[in-house]
Length: 369
Image 1 (tube, rainbow, N blue to C red):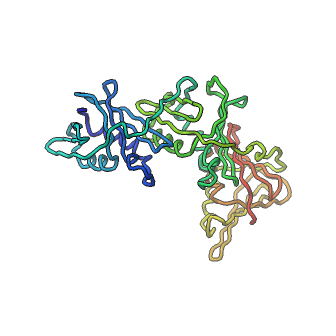
Image 2 (cartoon, one colour):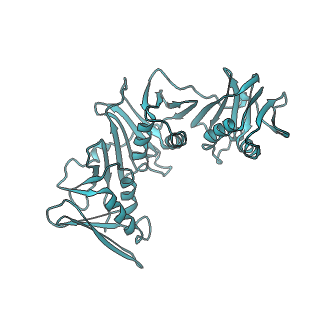
Image 3 (spheres, rainbow, N blue to C red):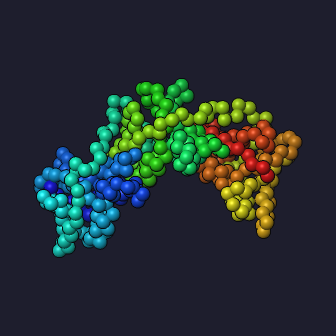
């Protein structure tokens, strides 16, 4: 194989695939990425056996071929090369990878393509398109509520459903639940799958870096045990989570005896201040509602905080306590000037929704104040 390209293109591709590189792998070949020529372009591929990323780079192909290359070493070399110099990459029969740029010469040892895992293609037979910005927004509004403990693997994913309610994403860690929905996405076939958060964090990062316009679409393909995402020159393939997601509909309160409307920014500002007085993640902030006022307090051994904000509330005094970080997670992801908080008792879950009525719901379990 012999190709010529520029540093910027190579570096962009390596940064896309290298982010998923895991230092914990026991298979040395998984510290490598696959580089091969395909249809006049240079294809680079990385996998950790759970997720794979393919990216195509514009390059001049003088001779075809393939090789796997240590990802970190290759990236380190690229960063030392001059930005305005072309890069030539050549492989030989002994699996040496020669990297030439200007008067700089490197070589390192690669391994044959045959030693690298086979990467499946994106399934386009059961696929749909969704605005990249819409997809990113729905993921952001739910992913923070997913579990992070490895023992709760089913909750380490986000439930994706397409049915009578449209397209929905649901995430929960057992103490809170976030649901984002959209009825304007054209999907032909109903499905119910659990998508790992790992690939979704990569999709968020990829969209953030590429800054797609409002009309740019992401192709999503769903297979028997995998999901794929494709935009521009990059494809992500991931295994789905195998298991049964909890019955989330039972968690969402069906009635709201008390309903309060409050400014998103004001309650977020006061919650941030109150959180400073909470010793650890197990600490609680108290929210007391009375006569159109929300009184927020937090007390620890060495600190104390109190403040209040106007709300729309008429009724008897009601007090409930929440983990402040759980509150802040949802408040910073709600794109609405005001929120509606629905309550029943101080020990039952609360439901938080944007006041503008979009398809977003957040359920949070209270704490003992």
